[in-house]
Image 1: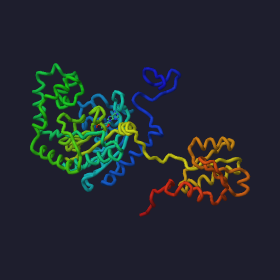
Image 2 (image 1 turned 90 degrees about the vertical axis):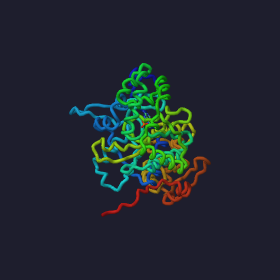
Image 3 (image 1 turned 120 degrees about the vertical axis):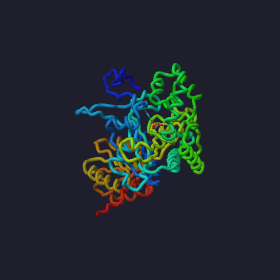
Image 4 (image 1 turned 60 degrees about the vertical axis):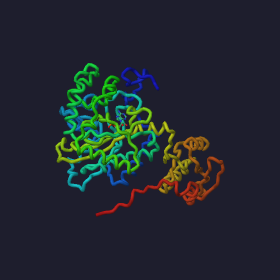
Length: 449
Ligand code: AMP
């Protein structure tokens, strides 16, 4: 790590650095991101989800209304700024609020319900940077909107677990599950909590003292030692759930058991955002617990209405991609990737370069991943480069080869060479690397109305 000044903006030598808490995703890490995106797309497409992207920034009001003013995210962690006309905008700290705003704005209520959407996007929170905690991080998430049934929540948890399984990390996590009931049943519970904490206020942290007045349920997931001890003897929400929420929760547990999903009932799980109703869940690290949670979600039946739409139920999940990658690396999981070169073209002289250029595009069109040295280096230097790029074969074209209409192909591992007629070389290369390894372009055929 280079030395950085206090602000972390540059090294003493004046070289600019990234701001604190953000990071580059370098090519080696992109192998993981690409693979994760593939798994997510594959599993969600199988289940009928479609992809959505919402803007990086929205009106601040959206998050204040959806997430709640006294949550950590809204009160401390948002990147909020004014644009040139003085409007307050915020970089999105989470995905659901924007997706629901879009659902209303684009009249998705008129579509067959439920509407199933997924996203993989960067998000922004002014968090204290530490292991697994960044100021820009990627989240994958998915939502089922327009229907309310515990079977849908079970589906979401099942899919989240399936994605973790495909990525080789499911066994590292436990599903923590709770119901925080309907807003009505919660009102009574909040009164009971306020009574419970009434004579214990002095032992609470400063933030919890204020939360006690605005949203006492937040006290249950405070990480401060004293607050945690008190939370453990506080009344539990399960005793105050209304009949409907109770039945919903019991059904959900039955469905999860049917689907073979193990879960841990956690009466202290409330999630950090205000919009949840009934089901809440998180995937906790088996050794580090909530600290290294990989994802979480729940039901948010009141959210669309809160944003000005017709009452519409919904349920969803979001997971942190950086944390997924860190866990995959911790487990020493390697992902298949396609960033390999099949062939390197070395050439000598202008005529050879001309031949090399057209051969390069023919090979690429056939799906052969091809690089070429287009400078003026010696053949020996170019062969050295081919080795460094890890190309298993090098095609060499010099003046003699141009004159005779042939090329030389060299097996870089064995060191053998043979001469091949120019118009046969593409087929020869395809045979050597195997049809199944070609990187062919298959976007599908265009059709016209
Ligand atoms: P949340 O909805 O806040 O529980 O976030 C869902 C998931 O996103 C978490 O379980 C983390 O995996 C990830 N996440 C949240 N905040 C951050 C952050 N600041 N840096 C990296 N990942 C994060």
